[in-house]
Length: 108
Image 1 (cartoon, one colour):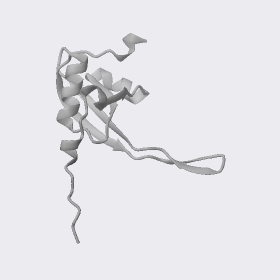
Image 2 (image 1 turned 90 degrees about the vertical axis):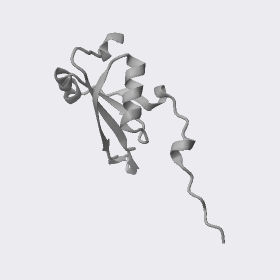
Image 3 (image 1 turned 60 degrees about the horizontal axis):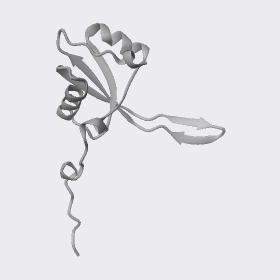
């Protein structure tokens, strides 16, 4: 009986920098973070902090001081008697260096 070989997911994933960043999170809490020079994005669940940092720096042209990540677990919701589960979302809170600015509302 042969054992299945584990495949290395890092070698298999061929993700571009634009694919790492899904969308910006614009809530009251994330807007208050802009006073502390921070911006919040939803990112891929498999993305690491160095990958997120490289993606933000190359896409937006800013220098990143720190990246903090968290995973919001999906909630169970009911709609017309049927049970559904929202998917998990990985959020990245990006702290920019002093003097750097990232305005997400300028394109609206």
